[in-house]
Image (cartoon, rainbow, N blue to C red):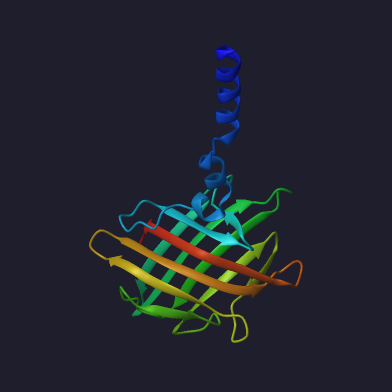
Length: 178
């Protein structure tokens, strides 16, 4: 009788266990790289609620912050392939805009003195605009060690489906080239 009670107790205990590891892996945010500021060369965001992590391509990450001909230019981008093998890239950039740590920049058109976001899908692309905007926040800018970190979000018209593509919870921590 004691064996049966013990066996029933063990079976009930096994089914009563809750495995939070399974739920953590299903959380899209937990799959993004952490928000660091030490030049870890990371980039990630949620694209329509799904994790977007660079990889699977030659040069899946790129970042530069340059001073050319008296003007500042910045670009950070990550690329990967979707389930169908189509190349995707998410990019944030500036033209003739000096960046400052702790500052938030609206992502608007790709114009002189502004910041913008772009989503590339195959051979098509779509940029932020007055109607579909976002924000870039520079959380660290270390020009001596060439480290730039930040967060971003933006909306664009999906270049293939013509629906709104929502890029959220974006973060990067990059060593940039000049």
